[in-house]
Image: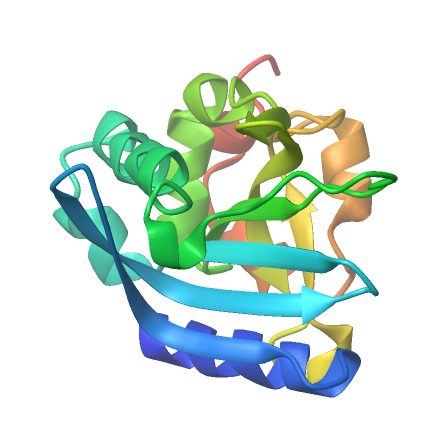
Length: 197
């Protein structure tokens, strides 16, 4: 599955579930001379501004990468410098109860990506969910996308850096039955999915 297909589904999802979201693909940033591009940038108002900064990884990106460290280095660079760019800066807001930014590293639900995440589960699982952008609370999510074939509003994620580590019973229970992710997990060797058994 290609990243442009993933991006299309992500854009359709935000358009379906939010009123008037600001959506930009391949959004550039430049902070302190460090330039980069974010796959999808979405600003929603719920009613406060919340930025969704999304890095997408399909089969080609996973195959090209030298490993999980390279993928995470790119993700961390995005996280560190995206909002440091004055054009994307977040400001603290009194009474804010929700995170002001959500950083997402989303993998395609393919056997290649499942195998990659499974073999590097400890690295991806170690990404702490809680973070901050200066004084603004933020959240990090490393996940597989689900619901790619249905209604755009039903697009979802199954996290690998939350309370349910990859391959755990709780993680497997969160995978929707009949989904691309469920099929991909079935196609990857059981010893890779659950090396403890």
